Amino acid sequence: MLYTNLSALKRRINQLSTDAQPFFFVINYEQTEGYLVENPLNQFEIFFKFPRVTHKPFLFSPTRTPHTAHRTPMASNEIIFNVIPSKFETYKSKFDRLQEYFKSQEISLANLTERTEIETNLSLESIFALSESLYQIYIPNKFVCFSPERFVKITDGIIFANPMKGTIDANIPNAEQIILEDQKEIDEHNRTVSLLSEELSVIAKNVHTARFRYIDRLKTNRKDLLQVSSEIIGELPPDYTQHLGDIIFSLLPAGSITGTPKQKALEILHKIEGIERNYYCGIAGYFDGKELDSAVLIRFIEQDSNKLYFRSGGGTTINSICEKEYQEVLNKVYLPFI
Image (cartoon, rainbow, N blue to C red; front, side, top):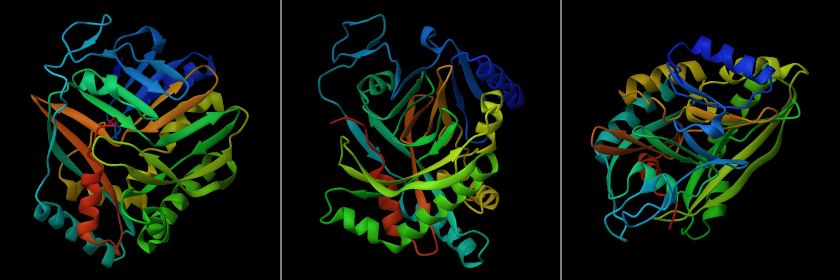
């Protein structure tokens, strides 16, 4: 069910979690609309695959012969994937405007994003069927997302957040050492961990960083990537299931895709990017009646009329180099399979 009244959505999440009823939800970045599906494993509105649950009734086939009730047709065995990047000068103009806000010390970190056209003979459904990633979400005729980043997980009263900040081409010699020792990346990651720790401290106690700047490797159709993440943990009050909706909304939008100070960064990014993110950089989550797991909607392909666009971005600071940030944006335009 699509909600345009987010207060009603929050109240319904509170009620369902209090009653220990399973549900799946998706909330857009601007918090102007969201989906909530009850009995999520027995519906055909939203499809997903999370670490502990799968609602993905699709099998990919390069022919038009269906393997299940849902088919993912493609004209040939060859996968076409062409990237049509925005001009560097266009990105640089946004980057330069952002640098002025860093210099005036209005903000210290901002996640600048781009919308990149792609050409492929795969449908959104086909991409979803083939995808391999930690979190996969597909809403027909809208978008497919194959996110590697957790938003929050809640189990037995413990809340976990895993912000992902820092990406590098894994094929670069000494890539892991380079990204872990890069001062700009260190500063960016520190600020994000600090922001999320502060936000979690409002709703939880004993908040601490359990793992700091660990590395994950992602395999893609274009190149392998190294991603840097941290894990922050806190203890929720005993009655947290009665307020699950309040907890989720108190943390929105996700700190890893905004900036610091958060509210000011949101205002500045809205002016500079000049286009709404909509469900890109929103969140999606699954509650099984006991535990919640959720993802940040990055690695995201949206459908707009008869075109597909890949949304990607990266954290920038006063020490950022425009060419490197532009390349990071393009590095993140990929399909999550080889």
